Length: 313
Ligand SMILES: [Zn+2]
Image (cartoon, rainbow, N blue to C red; front, side):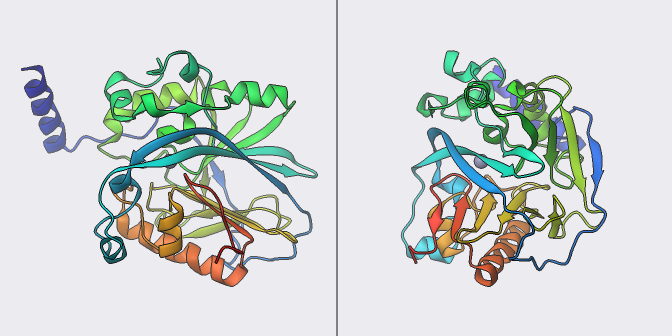
């Protein structure tokens, strides 16, 4: 009976076309004055260091991670099943501007209560939290390594990327891509409350504003010294971000969830049902592939599986 009522409410909401933002927290626009041409320099004035931290192992459905209708997926005989994945955050250390984080790891509350008070119970039941094996929590990692964060970039605001955000000092700026907060979607009716709690009270939230069509791919030389490029790659979510870090001998391309898996990246197959706009995700994935071809990064980091070295190919 309850289920029936819930279905009717959902249908009514759908018919009425109600939608909302992914979070109700206030967001400030962070104007990007000169979004440079899409070409990037491989001779940065400064070098940033990158460190990858695996915070958890987990699993997710392959049909969410990969478009199983893609001819390549069909040819490979891929069928829906649970796929092992991991959750990472990245530390970006700039010699002048200090340490920044990409994504936010996982907060302590998830080790104490697996269903977590921060995520509502319906969502928690969909998340296979019983399969989540946590190795590091955000606050304890930052304090034991004496890291004084200067900012956090979110590849996007899906749960698995904001699970540690509430543990980060409220003064630290949180940067998200164009339209990530201000876009309205029906699905957000069900996730907004949990996303609000995961981001914590009064987050210092900035949405990068490239000032043009939000569906366009854009680039920002964030520190202004060619050391760290932020790409707006819409599709997986409206404001998905990817990152390129030039350097010798190693350069790095961080994909976020524009490609979750190693296989998806190597074969050029887009994510499946976890992606909001598959056509835009396809364009962004094609762009990132081109970026790899032109700039030959030493390591490419899919959103949820181990990095791929260019020596593997
Ligand atoms: Zn993800």
